[in-house]
Image (cartoon, rainbow, N blue to C red; front, top):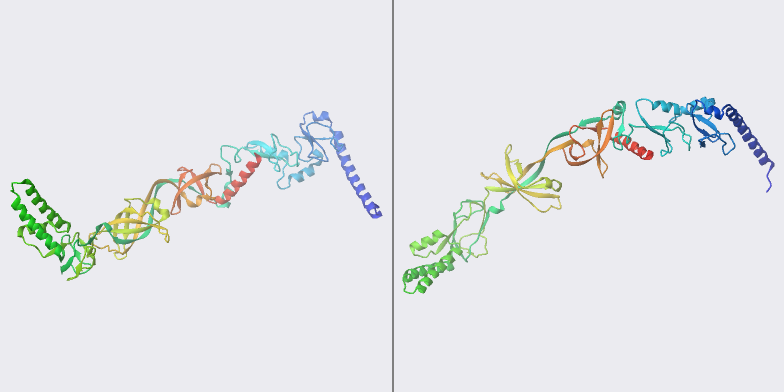
Length: 492
């Protein structure tokens, strides 16, 4: 392959230029090597290591030759980071003034103060450590000090950072003291007044017949217990009364019979007729009247089983009724229920016997208080609420079924460790706060949280009363903490 004259000329010029540069550097370093002998290195000046002047990253623990044939040059403890030694102080100063660069001498002086240096490390390769300042063997960068008060170095956990007061002001850091106090919360919801289902009576007859006279003839009428409701004519009731009277007379006649079996049979027949009347809801007073008069009653009167309001009526004069006909519904409203809707996440804080207060727009300024008697076992799929039943006394019948009311339920969580909710950094998997120590030290600490109430949150574990935590500016501190944590992991 033939080369053009133009390419040959360019190649020759490059070789000459490289030769001049190499010859100048060789002459300069050679003059220094001649002035530095091994004997002088063994004097009072301490040699840190020997290195190749053309390739400063090549180090050796003793003098000799570099792979390129150059003599190794000593690096003294009092020298700056310039590979050329004292003769290149200007270049050393230039490198020391570069951002992020400093000389071993200046770095060593910075560790002589109050801050204790644990070791020195290569910022580009933090795994490399040294017990003295110097230059990193791989990249030639100045070793940086690791102080004892850096995060992870002392008793503080990983992620602890130290921030000066000036930086705290710039970051808007605001703190608060952890408190230990009683935690109370009010649950406000709506409720509906309903009738007490345990105080509702349904009136039926147990024998077919015909309504003769009606005493309670409209819905909403207030009746007393034992008050007459209607009279009923029933052929079965008439015949049973006659059987009862016949059995009574037979028992009186045969009571002194010479044969005991006959007397016992007459008595048994009388008792059977009496029980049949009672099973058909004929009262003891009516049977007593039958005994006294000895006459059969054509119409039997039926009475209200409870005191309350008639909420349903199907009784009309001269109509036939059967046992499956519901004649009246009577509701005792002296006690009512209030069904309150509680969101499903609030249900764990509700329990039986808990007091609930109610207020109604119809009665401004008046409050009704009751206790929870039942918690329903299902959740409404539409509203995601659970009904809670509250039993309320209603002596004046002011509370009427189907009324709406505002309910207020007070939940007492007891005495808890309390902090502002904005102090918590929630990553989704854990929650942390920053605890403030003397000297501007901020320690990250994991916490387990309880309920959040009115901008405050209860801390179950992780903090104690009297400690100071960061409330505002914690995101900037967290960024600094994570950076320190990452650097700490690299240096270890």
